[in-house]
Structures are given as structure tokens and as C-alpha cells.
Length: 217
Image (cartoon, rainbow, N blue to C red; front, side, top):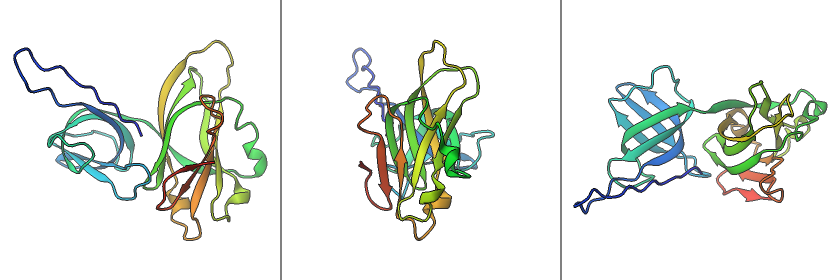
């Protein structure tokens, strides 16, 4: 999970430090007189509810995943509370796509990614990763293998392909993949996610089971 604490120095002559600023990926729950966010801890189905009174998110729709910088007014992190919202920005919100046929997965691992973190919260798979920068559209999606759809734990691949292979640099990205359609199937017990992970090739397969922590394979 993306957790970054920025401790601030106390003012000269003061013994009270400034409250830490937290950065987290959340889902927008509502925006009606207050901006309300659902924050899912890893493998949780019940969110922590963060409320920013008097804040409006404009055109960001309910259910959209965002990354926010905030301070909990009660001083305790990761409990439902009012917050002081500092920034809010949309991240990559993408659906789980079912490949039309097995051949549709060809080339899924052409361009590796540097995976920093991955977790399930509610009915989404969240990722923080570094990708080679490109100013051209790339193919980036979580694709389910249709031949595994009826299995208890279907398999999905993180497909990454960019059209240019010239000089590049790495940039940090955040993504939220909506797996609700799969997760709501009673016969589905989990999902296996396979990633061409250049940061640690030994950590390339992750299994998320309903109600259970992630288990790398």
C-alpha cells in the first residue's frame, strides 16, 4: 500500500510537531457538502471512511480511484475520521478485460514494469509501479485469460506494450483495476495476477483470495 509519512519539524520554541501528511489511494464515495473517500487496507472488504467537510471534488465521479494527500483531524491514521484534504488527483481507473481469445494475450510481457506495490481492496486491484515514459498511447490493461474464467481462481495478466522503444526514463504511475464483475461471481474464489516484474522477477505471480491475504507464488 502506498503509505508515505512526511514528518515536519516543530516550529522554533514549540514542542508540538506538525501533523504528518499521509498519501493514499482511495475511492470517491460521495461529494455532497463534503468529499467522502473509502480507503481499503490490503485485502479488506470494509473501508476506512475519510470525510473532508466543505470540500468539493468537481467532476470526479463516485467510485473513481484517486490519490489524496491529507491529515486525519483526530491524529490517528487509518481509522474513520474527518480529514484535512490537501490534494486529490485522479489515477488510472481501468476495468478488468476478458481476452476475446487466448491469442489476444500474445505479447502481454513485451515491456516489463517495475512493480512497487500491489494489493486488493474491496473489488479492485491497486498497483503502484514505474513505467518507461512515452508521449505516445500505450497498451496497458489487466487481461483475464478466457480459458481460466470457469476456474475457482482465474488468471489475469498485466499487459504492457508501448509503441516506441527509444531512449526513455521511468515515471511513477498508479492504477486501479475494477474486478467487481469477476469478484461477485459466487463460484470465483480469487484471482491470480501475473506481471512481468523487472524490479524482482521472482515476484511475478500474486494470488488474491476472498477474505484472505495475498500469497505470492
